[in-house]
Length: 437
Image (cartoon, rainbow, N blue to C red):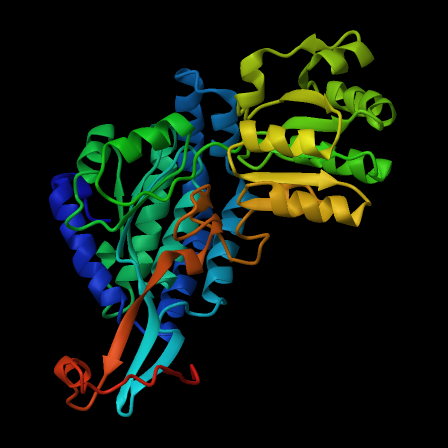
């Protein structure tokens, strides 16, 4: 792997821009061959990755890194093999570049098409998770984008090894620029990267809401914000009790450190006596710290009272806020007021109430009778994800290949000029839709 520390950020970004122009012209077969090579490199060097990860875990312990970050940091052989499989799943997806989206005849012999194309250079900033490196790299490469990666210091050794393997795979295919994937490591480099609007087309920060706000406030580059995951499960009065227990337990316990884990449980007052005692018992058996509203505390006297800011807090840990609500309207209002627009679900057998929840909750992912943990690029069939966007522009929710392309208009004529269509005697446009194929 080339020592990128010998280059300043302007040079790294310039190299990425040049690489992106080459990537935009690569055929699908070449892209997939490179991706298969990336997967093979990771599989063949599993021990090397695990060794580096052990060094990172020792560093995290010494630096007293918070538990949720350590949980995201740790990898084992299964996770490493999962990284390789994730890359292969991306290679199996359709190429999102060069897809004809719209076609129109403006006039006889003057045809306009809209075609998908790469965004260009992506700056991806994330914490802890080494498995984010192959996910982001594979998605960017398949969509024809170059990427500059910045992981957390706690995952530095793991990230170095994984990026070196990815770059080796890039170097083994003729005509593919190694600068398609680059790694930076310091906060100073992040600050410099945010200034590179001449070369970088999109920044994707994955982290706390505060961090995402910092990035947005310190760059002219468009930002695809993946901020807090303050997710809710609402158990409606018409819920199937068994389903309610399964969904709520999975949403919190399957992986509490994930951004799509439940942070607040909302329960309709009519069903609360049926479900809350059983849920609280199982949560406590798994050492979940529980806080609740006044009504919840009245039903469960040993429940600790929630503070006002608990309803606006992403715990990323074994802690849960519980609130009893009067009806669906109160549940929806609470979610839209306190949620982060990430993922929220209702458990109910009432179809009308379910449909209302789907339509009125203002989140990127809204679900019925399913765990919030399904909000994931791989589970959504996107192959992987570069992040989960809570934005309302360009891309929203789990961002896979389609969220990493934009489009260009191609106009093909036969000598037409605008003057022919101007003035009193100007020609009229036909504006006739054409078959996209």
